[in-house]
Structures are given as structure tokens and as C-alpha cells.
Image (cartoon, rainbow over all chains, first blue to last red; front, side):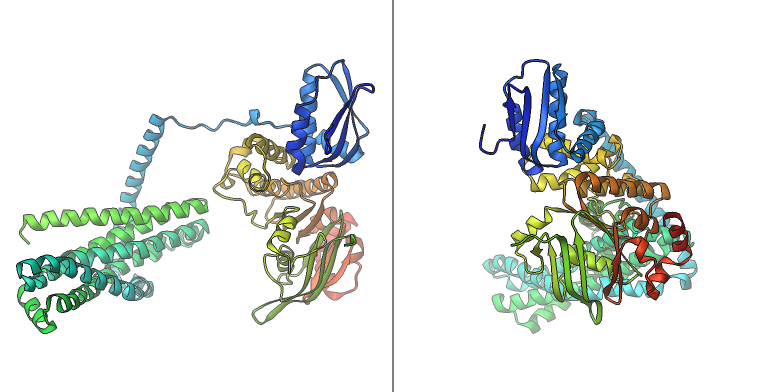
Length: 372
Length: 257
């Protein structure tokens, strides 16, 4: 018998003496001792609990299970000297016995089946998205006919949140991008002595591509995710259901202002980003390539067509539509738990950026085909 | 250290939120093996008191001793050893929504005790059956269960470590009368079976009459009176009379007294 023994087999008295604290903390040790018990001969066994100082439900469970095992080996084991409370606990555990084997199996679909499931659910989601966009479009046209019914104060709130408050971060980021472009291209141009062409390169790339793209990606991360999380939490809190029952369509109150607000804010942010991008490039051009600010601006006016700015600005509302519709749609898809909010928010940002880049590629192809 | 008979000893507890003092020097003792109810009007600080006992918020001053360990100054390690000996059922159950009921019940075992996976699941299943949930519920997620079953699942998680002390925050609120009565019975059974000490915040007059041994009445940031329900309803204090001798209180009293 070990020093902290929990069970001892007394051969003369044909009884199993239990000792000590049969508690959760000692469970592995007790289990080990029960397993290493020598095989018990004969047909009768008394399990003596007089020396048990403490028995909790985990210890009780172990004892009951051991008894079940020996009884199935046709040994008639019975309990003696257990207190009334302990006996009550043991009999309750015996009665309640669920075991892992009874647990209904969780079906895990095979590889092919799960591929099928995910394909079907993707298609369903795409259909739901189309339905959502269609409903919003109808709602938008309806409110075009009754412009006074539009929630102007919510709209202003959205423009403030998504536009005005994003100004500092967008300015800093575009400035940096301008600096980087100017630095990388300037290095190449200097080799050919074509320093002054930095103005053309920088102007076109910032106004046509980087301004709208960088702004949209930043806004997708900043605003699209916020839309999803807000609407998702509102859905979990049944706030959206509440609006529905009051006869206030959530599309009108929540989605439409967010969509239109972002369509106003994103082009404005793009102009802001263009200004700071060009300023960043200008700073770099003057310090690295020796093109003074005055000369830079003069050439900028001569060589950069207005078309470049307009093309960049024209993309912005499309990107805004993508960000806001995906963000709101993912918000409405949230269901049940906290994990779902996280999953949908991630999805909203990833999908928004994905489709922004796809749309940008399509624009490039179209513009080059029509020589714009 | 000499052992004290009290499991919880709150003394001179002061808590404030901003400018409002919720507790102005509150004293309360919970004895071993009893079921203590905490009642009071809305805003009297019942849940705040519970949160202070659980060290979820720090009091301005005063002391909270649980298992003879001062919690307000306890180190991380001391606090942990106390936390292993208590279980909590929150008002909104606080089940982990991304885990199944079995995983929820097994969670404390998995985190705090070194046992094999099968043993952990077996013990969690035992608790799930003790609280009267069908085995089919074990693989379901909390969102798929009814309110009463969620409470039971929360209770299974609270008792999975065989705690000596159980905190219940409004255990029967929002349940249908049948489930509420079942839960009352379950609490009494578990208490006698596992030798628990139970502290519960509740508004439910039936629960107060049927389950509790003593009831603490909170008002004015203090404990006005701690007594059995029988004696408490006879207390002449106006606030206590208003609480227990309204139309609902009189019906409950006429049934149980």
C-alpha cells in the first residue's frame, strides 16, 4: 500500500477498504490504484467506505463505474459503512448514468459532401446578396421619388463618421504612398536624366489608380467592418426585428443612409487622398530630383488631363457601393453567437477588398479598350 | 489561522458608481451549508454585491473574505485557489456560444484539472444528467436550447468542479412556472447532496419561500435585516413590508407560511 493509498484489499474480511479524499483533484491517482488492484476471487465483496474522509461527485462517479465493472464480472459487490449522504449521492450517480457511448454521434460530412455543402451555401449566399441588393435598389428608387422621406440626419451622421473622421488617416496614408511612388520612380528616371517626367508618372498613377484604390481599401477596413459589426449586434439584440414589427423598414432606416452616405463620402475622401498623394510626391521630387515646387505645379497643370481626375473619382462611388452593400449584407447574415459576428466581419472586409480590386481591373480593361 | 464558521464575510463594504454610493458600509455573513437569498428593490445593489463577492469589481473600501481569504488584497494565486472552489450561474447564463453544451460543461475541467479527455467528458456528462438535461442536449449549442435548458446547462457548468460555494444570479427569472419550480427543486437537491453553500440573488417569491434558509434584505446601501422568510415577512420595517406584503407577496405568504 502506498503512503497516500485510497484503496486496500483485505483478503480475510473479503472487503475493499476505501481511504482518504475521493475528490476530483485525486481522481487520476485513485483511478490508477483501482486499475492495479489484484484480481479479486470469490463471489462476495464488501466495499467499506468508513475511512473515506471526503467524497465528491467525481470520486463517486469513479466508484460507481468500478462497481459496475466488477459486477459485470459476476462479483456481488455491495457498499457498507457509507454515510447516508454519500449513499444518496452514489445512488443518484448510478441512476443518472449517461456515458460517452450513449452520446448521439455528430455527423461529420466526408470531403465530397462538405465540398458540396460549401458550394451550395456559397450559391445561396450569392443569391441572398442579389436579393438584398435588389431590395435596396427598390428602396433607393422609392426614396428618390419622396426625397423628404430619406433620413437626412442619419445620412449626415454616416458622412461624418465614415468621411470626416477618416480624413487624418487617409491624408497620412496617401502622403506616404506619394512619397514612395516618387522615390521608386525617381530613382529610375534619374538614370535617364528624365527627372521632370516624375510629374506625369506621379500625377497619372495617383489620380487614376492609387487615390481611389488606397482610399477604398482603407475605408473597407474601417467602415465596412463597422457596418457588419453594428448591424450584426443589432440583429442579435433583436433590434432589427423590433424595427420590422414597428413598420419601420430597417432597409430604409439603417441600410440606405449607410449606402448613400458612403457614396457621398468616398469620392470626397478620394479627392482628399489625391491632394495629399501629389503633395507627398512633390516633396520627394523637390528633395531628391531637384524639381522645385513651382516647376512641378506648372508642369502638372500642363500635362495631367482633367480626365485622369474624373476617371479616378468615377470609380469611387462604385467602390463605395461594393463596400457598403457587402458590409450591410454580411451584417444581416449574422446569427446567434459572438463567433458569427467575428466571422462575418472578417468576411465583409475580405470580400469588399476582393471585389474592389476585381472592379478596378475591369475598369482598367474597359478604359484601355475605349482609349480613355 | 483559526477557522471561522462563516464561508463569506463581507464587512464595511463601500462601493460607488460615479457620484452615487451603492453600498455604504455593508456587512453580511454567509454560514457554511446554508442557502442565502439576497433581495431588495431594483437598484438596491444586489447584483453589485454579488459582483463584489466574485471580485468582478473592486470596492472603494471594506473587506470581502471568502473561505477565510481576504479577496480585496489577495494575490493572483490566492484568488485562483478560491475561484476553484466556487461556481457561478450568471443571470444571462454566460454560456460560451461557440461551444456545445458538453464542451461548455467540460470547459472548467479541461482548463483547471489535468485529466484525460474521456474522463473530462464523462464527468461533464454526469453533471449534465444531474441537472436534468436529456443526453440529446449535450451536443447542441446554447442558441438551440430553450431558456430553461440554458439555465440548466449553465448550472451544469457551475457545478462541474464540485464547488463548495455556488453563486446564482436570478436563477428562475424568465422561466415558465414549471421550469422555475424544477430549478428550485434542483437547487435544493444539489445543495443537500453536495453539501453546497448557496448565495442567490432573486426576486422570485416562490424561490425565496421554498429554497432559502435565510434572506438578506438590502436597502439604503446596507443589509437591513437577515432572517428566515417566516420572520422577515413579520419585520415591521416599511420597505420590507412593501416588498413582501404587496398583492403577490401576500399570495406567496398564504401558500407557504
